[in-house]
Image (tube, rainbow, N blue to C red; front, side):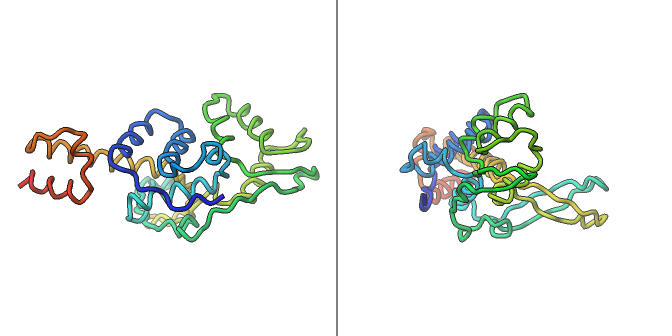
Length: 240
């Protein structure tokens, strides 16, 4: 299934999604974001997305909002210093040319056991993400993605097989601390990163609303309805 190009979110929708990012679990929030960006898509089709495909779409939505590269300041666990990372989505296999492929189910052999294994889908994440018992959640997830006898099967081996089936669902970046030279393997979560950026963008828009309303006395609704370029113009006028 190909969803095409995501719609650009308007200011009101962006602010609403930013607020919901603090209220919803990550899986549910990612579904809300995709529903807003792909209004033509059926909910069941979005729930059926493999996690790697979902993450690719999340980054496509981000690209309509933020053109800047990905930036982060991880802390070195050896020396305690922070260092800057700057990279493009393409560096993580999440660029616009990465495609939206569904790995589908595959016959695998794990620890000598033959199984049919499919990638973890968004619906699977929603089924387990609010469970407080982590081992129970892992067992439920395993039952959802496996067709076959899993008795005695180590979950670690299943996790490895799932990573091989849908590599884009589990992204790691190997890097090195410039201060002490320690090597690190850092996980990248497209949903968490996009939610953080979206909240920052929403806060800036709300600051713009305050600046414009203070001078022109327009309503929040009218200010948010302005195109980005017009809103920027009135902010500049309000601050002069």
